[in-house]
Image (cartoon, rainbow, N blue to C red; front, side, top):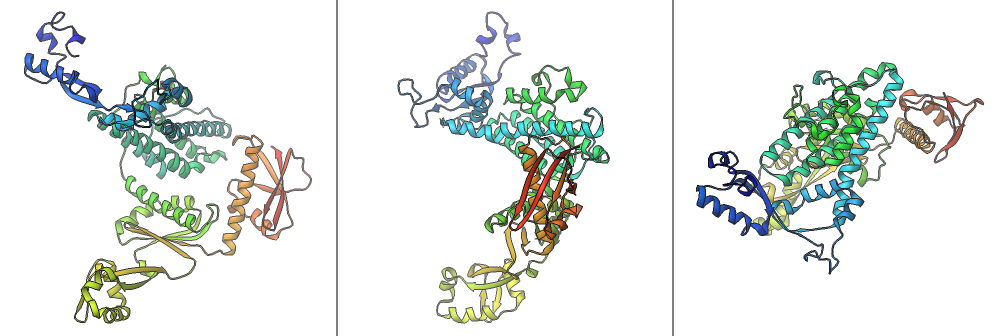
Amino acid sequence: MPYASQKFPFALSEAEFRQYFPADFISESIDQVRGWFYTLSVLSTALFDQPAFKTCVVTGLVLAEDGQKMSKSKGNYKPPELIMDKYGADALRLYLLNSPGVSGDTLLFKDDDVKKVVTNVHIYLLNGVRFLKQMVAFYEKTSGQTFQVSPQDEHSLSLVDRWLLQKTQEYITDIHTLMSQYNLREIYPKITAFVQNLSNWYLKLNRSSMKAFFLSECPRVYLSLNNLYWSLYYFSVMTAPFAPFLTESIFLDIRNWCPDHATIESVHLIQMPTHLPVCVSNDLLIPFEYLVKVINGVRYLRGTSNLPARRPLKEVTVVSSSPKVLSHLEQVKSLLVDELNIVNCHFDSQESKYLKYTVILDPKTAGKKFRHRMSEVAQSLSQMPPENVLALLSGKSIQLGTDVVTPDDVILQRMPLTPHLLFQSEGDISVFVDTEMTPEIELRYVAKQLNRTILDFRKELGLVLSDSIKVYYSTDSDLLQSVLSTPNYLKNLSLEPYTGQESFAQTTFNYFDLSAHLYFARM
C-alpha cells in the first residue's frame, strides 16, 4: 500500500499507478511510525520525490485496565467475543471510536465503559423507536388511516419539530465535516449529543403532541410522527459507518412507513446525504440553548429544595439585561410552561425587583488597599445609594469620598426579597422560582398525583396507549371532587362518578388524608 496493493511496477505502468498515488489515507498503530510509515516515506521519496499518502491516521496502543500489555498468561483482559456477546459489536466499536486510541494515545481498556455506551446510545435510541411505533399504532387507531410518511415542510411544523429538523441538518453537516478532516475522536460526542437532544429534549417536550386522543388532533400528530421518522432515518444513514448493526436494526424497523424505503434491503445501501431535501433555517438553535439553560436551572432549584417534579410551581421568572435573550425566550415560552410544570412564566430585565444586595469589603484584596481605614470604608459602603450597588454589580468602580472602590475590593451578596423565592444565575440569565403553595397549586398537585396513579396502574395491567378504557371514581373528599370535576387539571383523562358500573380492575388513590377508589372498565 500503495505499491503492493496495485502490484506496481509489475501490473501497472507508472502513468496508471499515478491514478492511485499518493494514497488518500493510511492507518496503523503508533508503533509503525518507525516501521511501515517510515518505509513508505523512504520509498516514495526515493522513487517519486513526494509523500506516499495524503493523510495518516495513527492509532494508539490498547492496554489492559491495569496499564500492562494484554496477555493470556496474565489473564488481564476479557476476550473481545465475550464483550461483543454481552454489549454488542457496535458498543465496542463506539467505545474505541471515543477513546484516546484513535488520537494515537494509549487506551486502558475498561469493560464498564463499553456498558456506558449501551446506556448512552443504544437504550435511548431503541426506546425512541419503540415510542414511535406505539404512537403510530395509536394514530392509526384514532384516525382510521394507515401511517405513511411524506416529504417535510419546515413551515408547517411546530416549534419543537422545527428545532429537531434543524438539529438533524446540523448533525449531517457535522459528520461530513469531521469525516473530511479525519477527525474520528469527535464523532462519538456528536452521536451522543444528537441522541440526547432527541430523547431528553425533543421527545420530552413533544410527547403530548404525538398522542392522537381525538380525530381533530390527527393532522398535528401526523406532522410530529412524520418528523420523528425522518430524523431517525437520517440519523441511521449518517451513523451507519460507526454503528452498522444498531442503525440497520433501526432502519429495518421503520422503513415500511415509507414506500421509497420499503424495498431497500439495508441502510448501508443508501448514499449519505450532504443536506436535507427541505430548506432548513437555524433560527431556533439559540432560543433552544436558552430553553435548556432555564429548564436545567429550575430542575437544579427543585433538587436543592426537595421539590418533586410533579409539584406545580406558582411562577418562574427569567431575568436578563439583554433584549435579544428575552426575545429568544419569548419564542419558547409555551414549551417552558409545559415542561417546567408551572402556572405562570414571565421575563424581566431588572434583577433588582427580586433581590436585595449586600456589599461587604473583601479582606483579601481590600485589606491591603485600605489597611487601617477598613472600618471607615465599610461604613461608607453600608450607606451608599442603590445606584452605586448596581454599578459594582455591572463591573464598574465607584467613588466613596476620597476612595475608589472596585468590584475586586468587595463581595457582593444577593438575597431573594421573599422567603419563598429561589434563584440561580448562570451567564447572562437569572432564574427565579416562586414556591408559594396556593389553593390552586394544591389542586394541580393532587391532579398530577392522581394522573400518575392511573398511568402506573394502566402499565401494571399491561395496557398500551391505544387500549381505550373508562375510569370511574368514588370519594368522600371535597378537594378530590374539585379536582375530578375540573377537566383542565386532568389532561386527556375523563373520569366519571362510580354508580355500580361493571369494571375489570380496581385500585385506590391515596394522598395524605385524601382517598378515592378507581374502577377501570373497557370501552
